[in-house]
Amino acid sequence: MKIVILGRDGVINQGSDAHITSADLYQPLPGSIEAIARLCQKGFTVVIATNQPGLSEGHFDLDELEAIHAKLTALVEDAGGSIAAIFYCPHGPEDRCNCRSPRTGLIDAIEAEFDIGAQGIPMVFDALVDLQAGIEKGCDPIQISSGRKEETLVNVSGKSSAEPLQVFDNLEQAASYIIETYQ
Image 1 (tube, rainbow, N blue to C red):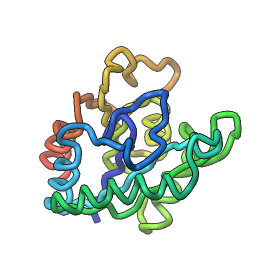
Image 2: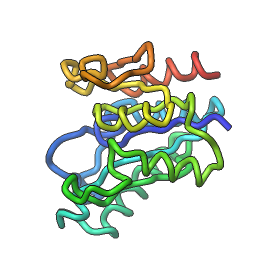
Image 3: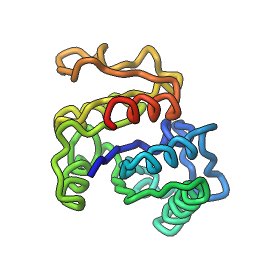
Image 4: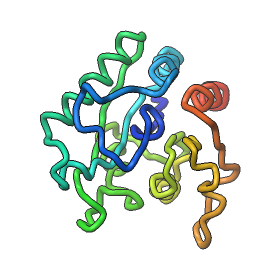
């Protein structure tokens, strides 16, 4: 099984400090839905891992989050792909849970659900904290710059990174790299 782990905010849709609080507000980045469909059509199982502190902060509830994810799933299916699973951390940074990046709980859950090891799995995120969790589990980090070009993993002091770190402008470029490299 060829698995790809994708972040949601900043990878599939615009990332920001403001929370996406409803399915009506959810808008994917240009080309991201088609990129997921291409990965699926090339035999990859696409899994999403996402921190969603807006749940614990009261910005939206579980029904709203599920509606957002249903919209995302439907868009991908309409484009000819599928999302195998969406794993999310509902906690805020102050909760110190095991599932919020940079801790590895979401990746641990993916390993358990799919009965795989994360070693060598491509992992596409925009935030360093998410990539650090993946590196700790042995994933191959791929970063979407999403306007954060100054914040790349190679700038994190004291944290080793997998070499070479791949940085792309968008999921379309990252998907092309994954298809070419991991096929």
